[in-house]
Image 1 (cartoon, rainbow, N blue to C red):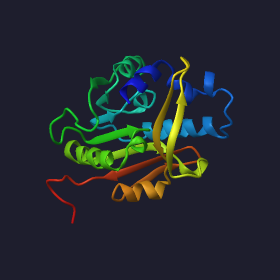
Image 2 (spheres, rainbow, N blue to C red):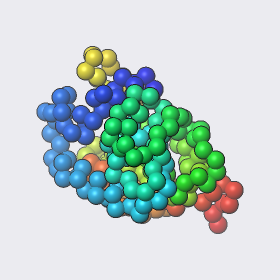
Image 3 (cartoon, helix red, strand yellow):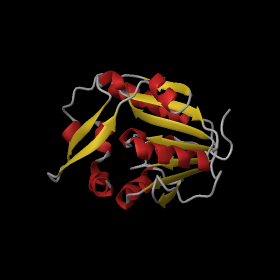
Image 4 (cartoon, rainbow, N blue to C red):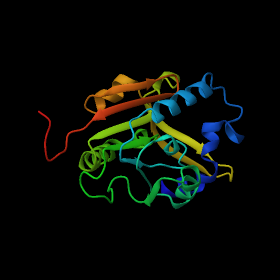
Length: 205
């Protein structure tokens, strides 16, 4: 989906900010939850963090500490450099992270995990365990959707149309899927879960 995110990069934040094609959407409580989401992210202890699929940097800018942000889309990274100028940016594959083992204290990812189908999820979590010991996932709450997953139609301002695989979560369900974790925030629109992940070289008992 690199082509989709390249094309969407200049308008991606419209979704967060309720602009243009999202201006007329009925999203009760959205702005308040977005503020709470930012506070939750900013409240994470400042450690060496890898932000995977950072997109435009809309969430990256709230992370504290030594932050490295990765995305496969060069155009997304152009946007992210403006939003989070103190971070270090790397273009790369989230399923084959270009970093040595144990490079980070935390891996953070926002609105990426829910786009992964089962084989990709397994690859991603294996990579997380390889490079970091803590995972923080921000994704879409099931409360507003009423469904577990679907192919989500997307139309961009240039008239192009795309279909993107999308899942929705409860906090408890996401924590269980990650092997156990702490629900940091759960609302109508967003969930945030933190999980401690054992290394594949040192299986959890």
